[in-house]
Image 1 (cartoon, rainbow, N blue to C red):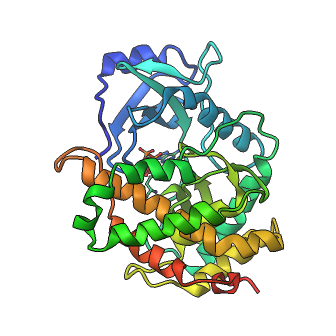
Image 2 (tube, protein in one colour):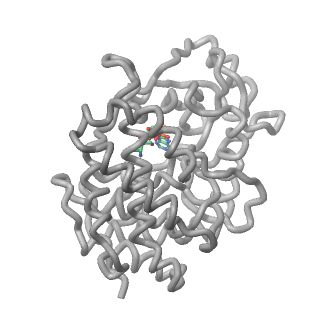
Image 3 (cartoon, protein in one colour):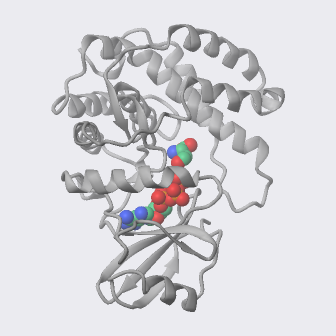
Amino acid sequence: MAVYTDVNEEQLARFLEEYKIGHVRSYKGIAEGSENSNFLLRTDTGSYILTLYEKRVDQSDLPFFLCLMQHLARKGITCPLPVERRDRQLIGELAGRPAAIITFLEGMWMRHPTVAQCGEVGRELAELHLAGADFPMHRANALAVDGWRTLWDGSRDRADSVVPGLVAEVEADFAVLERDWPQDLPGGIIHADLFPDNVFFLGDRLSGLIDFYFACEDFYAYDVAVCLNAWCFEPDFSFNAAKAAALTAGYQSVRPLSAAEQQALPLLARGSALRFMLTRLYDWLTIPDGALVQKRDPLEYVAKLRFHRGVTTPEAYGIS
Ligand SMILES: Nc1ncnc2c1ncn2[C@@H]1O[C@H](COP(=O)(O)OP(=O)(O)OP(=O)(O)O)[C@@H](O)[C@H]1O
Ligand SMILES: N[C@@H](CCO)C(=O)O
């Protein structure tokens, strides 16, 4: 359930006076999502998403996220467009939290994406990378190798209680990743969390990308690696090579990967699997049972991590 902060009709009506989107016709909390409070808002002028930013989002990052969506939407990426207030600002305050309104995107996310849909995601990811190339704002990736260390320091003591032997496995990963992490691959704006629940489809046609709240600057190929993890494994955690081939081919149809990017993919995929394993493990160990924040299974990413440890060439991801 992701409505942490309640909003009453009066507060909302007052908030909407700052916008030019008419009066509220209806609004209801959206259960999906875990970071922020989201509402589906219908007004005289259409449907919108109202988001109240909760504690896990750093308020100083909000201008970056919202201006990035505005930039990408103007460049033809089908992502939500933040609605400007009368004072032209994108962020206001509602029920004591920073809040914004963004346009509603049609479509639904795929719980079991097809090979064709993986190809679509790869293509759109490359379009996003190209469209972000001239975005003028900056944000370092807080969840790059140094950030993983911090998460691990907060989880290591109890990690073996979740998966026996995990401490030794992860220490070995850190030794390799900290030594061999690439220094100079092509990079720029990346989405960094393009999971199936952040991509909408209408049939096989991709209709929108959402949730830019991890977007940052990092290697483009790292974003491909995030998608390989998020899209190309089956519910039993087995790797689907046909989906990976479609995803990387879709990406390369727009932005070919250099030889160095291709060679780095196994390590980037391993690092990205470690990143999601660590955030999930940290939440698993620190969020009390019964809290509103949805805890995701770290074991899924332990399995993916084990898969990537055994990969040495980019051919495994369908790159020939
Ligand atoms: N622009 C949009 N158009 C339509 N639906 C949206 C839009 N933005 C968000 N939603 C809906 O709200 C839900 C939560 O959004 P979002 O993923 O951004 O939340 P979050 O709290 O940041 O969650 P998380 O980071 O855990 O995925 C989505 O699954 C989707 O159903
Ligand atoms: N996509 C992340 C959650 C943060 O949005 C995960 O599945 O662990």
